[in-house]
Length: 132
Image (cartoon, rainbow, N blue to C red; front, side, top):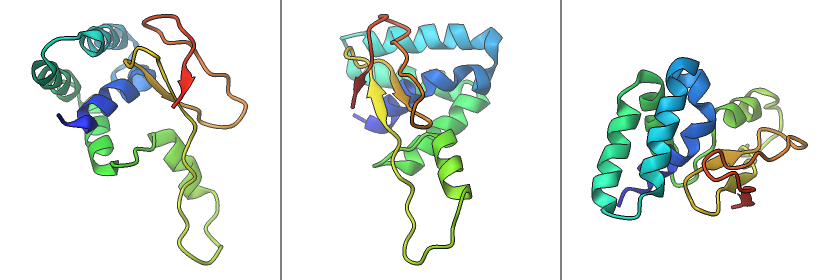
């Protein structure tokens, strides 16, 4: 099982509107949600997740970013903000990981872009996201 594909499918959902546009985002989100909540045939589901993510340029680039960034994936907006603010201290500067939240059912992951941003509910189940 390639955990990177699963992580990308869970993590891309909050970014779909900006990656594929509002007209397509709902359909892609529904397809990902359905696949992520399916309980049979992990290998087949993983293959389908990869197909859905590779089908559009924005999600394909996101997938490759996740696979390149593992084992510790950091979402694009958080990394961009962390790496461009200040770089004058000595030593090996590393980005501070963003707070990660996930649906208890495991189909949705959201990263808090900055302190104080309220945690949303899972768009699939309507349940509160838990700290991961």
